[in-house]
Amino acid sequence: MIRNHAKKIVISSTIFLLALTLAISLPMLHSEHEMANEIYPSVSLPESHLGKKVSLEQAMQMATFKVKTPKSLPTETDLLQVYISENGRHATVLYSNPTIKTITESVGSDMPKAQLKIFMEERKDNPIPSLEDGLPPLKIEIIDQGKVEQTKFVEQPLPKFSKVMINNVEGVLFTPDESKHIFISTLSWWEDGTLYSITADLPEPELIQIAESME
Amino acid sequence: MIYVTIFVVTFSLFYVPNIVMATHDGCGTHTRYNTEGLQTESGDRNGAEGILKIKNITPCGTTTNQSYGHHTVAMTMPSSDFIEAGIYKGYAQGFATGNNLHYVLIYDNEGGYSFRDLTSESSGTKKPNVNDQVKVTVFWDYYAWWLGKDFYKVIINNITQNHQITVSDIWSHGTGIDPLTQVEILNQNTVVKSEAATLKDRTTTTWDAWTSSAGFDRPSSGNPLCFIKDASDKYRFGVDSGSTCSTS
Image (cartoon, rainbow over all chains, first blue to last red):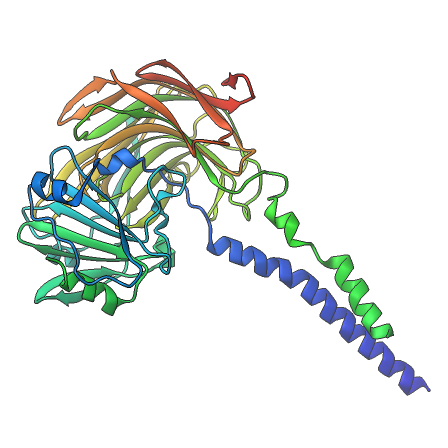
């Protein structure tokens, strides 16, 4: 009789604890999901930031460098918008694709929501090899009443990247890095005085395929 | 049957429904609102400057809900990188200032956000107060051709308290395009009221007062923030109270 009573107490307590655990953990799971989709403080980028809207043909005529577009794109990808700067030294081509994650940099701005971005910029020197050199530390100087009170140096690490080859040209792939709040990959390479960058939530082989098809 | 009852009663008593989370503890919509005074002159610009005067920042929410408000001076780059610096209060990504205003530096390079609590860098000794005049300068400093990188400098000069924080060698990809001053909140019911005066931009090494500028609300509808343009180089930011923009 006593043993049966104790058994009931144990089962009741177990069920109580199970229900309590579930009740507490479910909202926390929701919260963690919410945290994964945090909206980060940032400057909202106005559409004008990218330059003026033009057709692809106009961009090719106005650019001071060779505007290239990919011949190979994931299925369901459509050209969304083309922009070029006033001085013609950089251009941006945005694509839409309902099957790919949206590039979130334009949250809160009036920029079109794109899933694939190609950024091109005239650059006389190839910046890719120099990434190996890393960055100098941030220098922070604190001055009070006109006198330097403190000078400190803070490490300024680069986001995580790996080297890749694109048609025998060395490029770099910046991969998602939550510690740096990078959620979408960017593939960059320099060719004929132009720095090309493709940003999209796609695996490395697909990004390289897109890059190698640009002409 | 009794065990089912125990489970249901316990779960019901302790479960906090998701709907409570979604409303962000009464702080309204969980999205980012910006109100900007935007410089609209054509051509590239190498710097932005303004004297900020914070009237009020009241974050609504907690760390979990990422609630904050800030007023900054910023530069955006053609690659979508940016640098902004100014005055901040609130909670985001472990960046908690409590009831104090702090100086902040936020920048993005190659798609990665970086935050720097500049008040903490001074061990808390340098922080702005309400109504302080704080001159914030953000400018392209140099291009290290041997590294192929652009570097920026930020100077936060509290004119009222006579202290300054300078941050050098900030990497961002590309020389700037749009200089702007921006008020930003997360969580709809956060309040920021502030002024930005003597707004300037820089072409190569010369600083010029804004002679052409336009203010924007982003998003353009349902934004609880508002602005009053007193002049091309002077804005007041506040909260939309229906028929008026409350800025003090």
